[in-house]
Structure formats: structure tokens, C-alpha cells
Image (tube, rainbow, N blue to C red; front, side, top):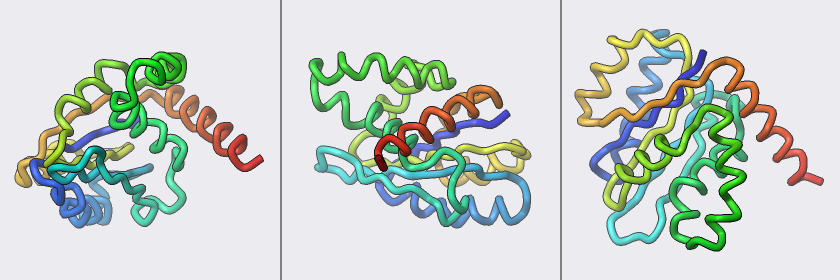
Length: 168
């Protein structure tokens, strides 16, 4: 079973600054990172800057299509209005079947706002108490949803098909 964790920071640089901590915890074998990305949202900007973190995970378990779609649902679709939002409803349903529900999306939307940043990490094999404490010391807030192995597989398959379609 994997976990999609979102660590929210109270500054636009917080998530990027926490990458060293995340790398150290992985080297100490306290966490196994399957995929990661972060969002930085400077005050006064209409939308956040997003970045995949392949350097932490190699190729990444889920890929760019997953992060692009997830960040689109959370940060960009609400800005586009109801016409596009209605069309995205069916696609959002596929995320729910993958283990990412609307409550999770709404909670991230509510907490990750201009002037903040967030680190999105898909992990497994976490020594929870040894990972949670160092992140809490940074002032980060944790939002999380669990993904079963079956849900992870469905997400990988859905976004692998999406990437293949985009290449054609």
C-alpha cells in the first residue's frame, strides 16, 4: 500500500526547502519515495508553479500525466469556471476510483493558496514517527490520503494510457 501525502508550507519556498529533508529521510531508509512533485504559489500570482521531482525517484511511478492532471484538478480547473469544470467531472471521477476523492481535492484547494507551497509525495514503507517529526519541525501541515496497491495500479495504468495517447 502506498500513500499520497501533501505537506503544506506557509511560504512559497517551504516545499522546495524541504527537499533536502525528504532526500535525507530516504537515504536513511525511513521512507521509500515512489513519486513526488511540488507546488510553489507566490503571493499575487494567479496560479502556482509546479515541478515534478524525478531526481528523487528516477522515472517516477505515476509520471507527468498524473501530476499534470492532479494539479489541473486542484489548482487550474476551479479558475476556468463551470463550463470546463462540468466537462472535467467525469475525469475527476476516475481520480476518485484511483483513491483520490473530492474531499481530498477540496482540502488541498482550501489549504494551498497564494503565499504557500506544498510537497506531494507518493510513498511506501514509511517509519511514520521518524518521518512525521522532522516535517512537523519545519512547520508543515500534513494532508494525506491512502492508496491501496490496486488503486496505485489503476492510476499508473490510466496515466500510462494517457501518455501513450498524447504521443500518437
